[in-house]
Every structure is written in C-alpha cells, then in structure tokens.
Length: 249
Image (cartoon, rainbow, N blue to C red; front, side, top):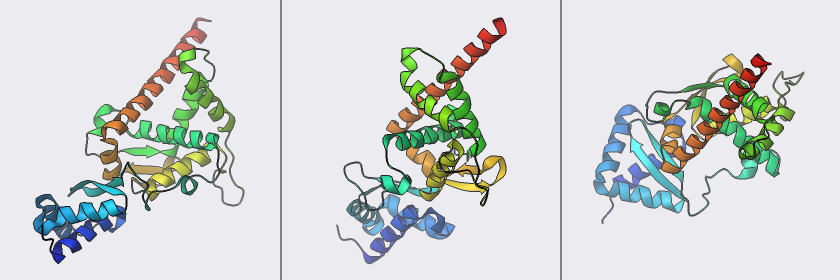
C-alpha cells in the first residue's frame, strides 16, 4: 500500500492525542482523524499502527469519545511508567500497598457492574477509598478463615498505616500513611490520563476518563475488577457477620 504524506501526518496526530489526552484536538479535527483512521484513508490506520508498534504501543480505539493507547503486552514501551516512577520506595510491601490502593479506587469508581459499560463519568473521592480500605481491613484482619488468608495479610498492613498524620508545613497527609499512599495512587491515575482531579472536597475528588473505562473493558481487566468487587463483597459479609455477633452478645 502507498501511504500518503497526509496519512502519516494524521497518524502522528492520532498517536500524539493518545499519549497526551489533555491536548485533545478540536472537535472538527478529531472527527477528521477518526474518519481517516476508521476508513484507513491513504493508509492512515496502517501508518498509525506501525508507528505505535515501533514505540511498544497498541491502539485500543480511535473514536470521538477519545483516542486510547495501551502498552503492547509482548514488550516494554519507552512510554511505560517503570516501577521506580510509580513508587518512591522499593520492596514487595510498597507494591502491595499500591495494589490495595488501586483496587479500592477502582472498586469505588466502578462499584456497580453497569458502570463499566456506561459512558457516564464516575466520581470517586480519597475519603471513599480510605473508608473502604479501613472498614474492610477491620473485618478481614480479625478473621481466621483460611480462604481469606491473602486478604488478611493485606488487611494487617492497612491497619498498621491507617492512622492519620499530616505535615505541619504543607498540611498534606504524610507519605507513609494510608491516606498519603492513596493520594499517590490517584496522582498516578491522573498522570496516565485515566482520571482528572475535580476538586478538594472529601480529601480530593476525581473523575474517571474515557481512557480508563476503555482499558478496563478489556477482558482481563474486567476480570480483575470482578475480583476486586468479590473481595469487597466478602469483606462486607464479614462486617455484617461481626455486627450480628455483637448485637446477639
């Protein structure tokens, strides 16, 4: 196929828009890019996929709602955040805490199954995620049921770092506290163009972007969210059981 210069320019614009969602093209320009990509006008789609592949990226979708890129699974991308970029300290516990924070954020944002297929923007706050982690860990940390072993070990960590502590200078939550870790997790979602901060209410209010929902629509990601929801339901069941035992005591 002979790829035109105009197609190469459009392909470059598509990748740029996918990499930097904040620089979304004007509606008329975006409409032209979407049309060129979907019809492969002049080889636009072919060029865009080839260029993305050279950077270790895949093009998930090019639609009017947005342009979504993802990391190609078979290789590292120069655009992929490395572990040290996301976490300020090494070690398995730091990664586990980040995973817990991400799980809580996603569980709060997509608590209802239909949220994953709805085009509506989801709102989640730091207080929401904090309360979910604290309330769940309180129940999970006390159970001796072997089926909850993994959750129990994670819950113990949450119990250890949940105490509130703020910097006297900046009045921000200290890094090593649970709230501090949640703030870092939210900031990573923002940096990756998957969320946007919408205010400071409730510890910090964030809204999900099309990019996040599109990535979660992937089968494997949906399965992960289902696991998160299952964990939340189990923790709530444990809480209800604990409350029932106290009321009958």
